[in-house]
Image (cartoon, rainbow, N blue to C red; front, side, top):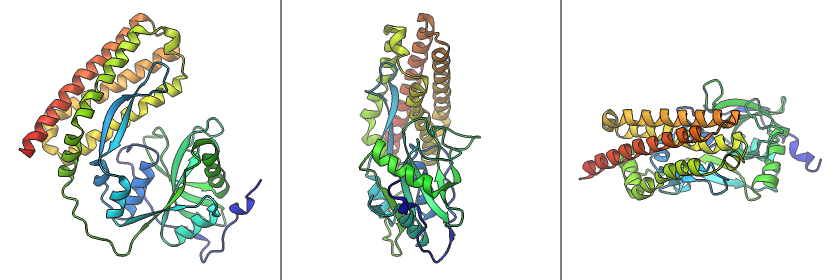
Amino acid sequence: MSGQVGLQASPQVSLQVSLGVTPFDRFYYKSCLHMPLMAAVQHFGGDLSRFWTNDVFVYGQDEGASALALTAFHFENRPEAEILKQMGIDTDPISPEDDLIGALQAAIGQGALVLVPVDRFSYHSRYNTLYRREHYPHHVLVCGFNVLAGTFEVIDAPETPIEGKNAFLAEVGFESVWHAHRDYLEFCDRSGRAVRLSRRTETAHVDFGSAAASLRETLLANREQILSGLSCLNVQAAALRSMDFALLKAEPLEIVLRRLFPIDRAKEAEYFRIAVAFPGCMDPLGELMRKIQMSLKEYKLSLGSFLLRGSLSASNRETLAIALERIYGLERGFNHGLFEALEQKTG
């Protein structure tokens, strides 16, 4: 195996370091990159709400899908690198030519954390269900090491909850991290880089304003995009009614359900941040949000069941289409009520 030297431990003052990072698990935030990133921001004393209030979640269509294309996308109001910089958190990419194992140990020894992109195909962890099954991009936060055991301490956020948790602290072998990062570069993204995160000693004091003001600005600035995205629910309903069974089942069930994961996450994050930023809005709108969440879960379970049993009959497709149209109505009611409340607060 080429690059074997990269698996050897670099000389260290200490053979074992743990920076005591705690997983972030209040809800699943956006992606497997953002979950460990939130753990790092939390560890460095940053304000997590600056990320939650910087996003909009929009229904969309996956252009690569054959038929069941409904998904969700998120968009940033401000670049996240700018938010990190203002918090006094530096981000420095590690060159792919560097000895990865030595670079990770050196960073941790200096109190820094490292976000490492890995390929789940070769990432050997008890929380990875795609090991040796599928090349798929993933990110972990390396926050400790044990030279004698040959392991890194990592924050890992699997794609789906395990035992009710969204993120875990785990021990992963040096060799697994090294191979999985190399495979990421080969099979997922050649431009991907491990990123060193560190807190500056001298941090500029930046007045972000309140979380409520930040979220209000983000939502109002993207109102048309949010409202127009709701039409994707009706587009998917029309597709279910018009497309034949063969086309609807053209993709593996796992891929279809994976496409719906961002919607689950978006709704959970949306509920949490609005409850934090606008507690006064939750009395009239909270019940609507819960109905939307439950309706989406029911749609996902029904779709999965029909696909698994090969029973996407005309009647079952009509049931799914009606469910999506009902969600569209709930979403319109919720969003118009929310924007009306936000305009009153800015008036």
